[in-house]
Every structure is written in structure tokens, then in C-alpha cells.
Length: 142
Image (tube, rainbow, N blue to C red; front, side, top):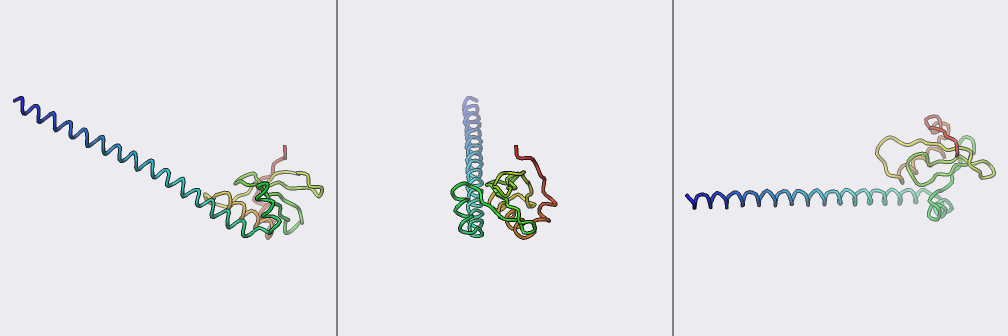
């Protein structure tokens, strides 16, 4: 009887040890996949910024690398816009004197990183300013 209880206790201990190891392994996988997702997100952002910089003029690229914004000229009105690094409410309309007039917010559909959003904004303002602003939200520059 005592030996059966001993074997039962050893069995339960072994079972508990296996469960603990399994939970530990699952926790490790979850941690690593989170790190993997983060690394993948950083890689995606890096690729998007590389593509953006390839589309920028040398002057725009220099400005972006120094200040994290670049200026574009609207295709229809000739208005100057400043696109700041970001994904929303990151566009400033500038007066002829270079002062902020207002902010604009428009983004492409999808879950895109900042580099891709800024490239889409640049292309939209430089090729179809009216269309871009027709779907944009305007706000004051306070």
C-alpha cells in the first residue's frame, strides 16, 4: 500500500513537472514571437523609410534626415506643405512666408508604417492635391 502511494505521488510529481515545463516552453515561445513581431515591425519601418528616401529629392532627403520633415508643393495650387514624420495629422500647410496656416490629416487605407504613409502623402499632394485634400481633415495650427 505504501509503495502504491509512493508511486502515485511520484507519478503526480512527474505529471506536474511536465505541465510546468510545457507552460515554461509556451511562455518562452510567446516571448520570442513577441520579439519576432517587434523585430519584423522594425524591419518593415526600415524598409519603408529607405523607400521614402529614394523618392525624396536630395534637398527633401537632407531636410528629413536633419529635422524629420520635408516640404512638398501641391500639384494644383502651388501651396507649400510640410510633411512631418508620422502617420496622422502630420502635414502642415505653409504660407508664402513659411508660417503654418493649418494642419491636414489624410492617410491611405491599411495598417501602414510611417514611411509608407508619408510617401503616399507626398505622392498624393504632388500629383493630385485636390483629390487628397477632398478626403483630408483640416485642423487649426494651435
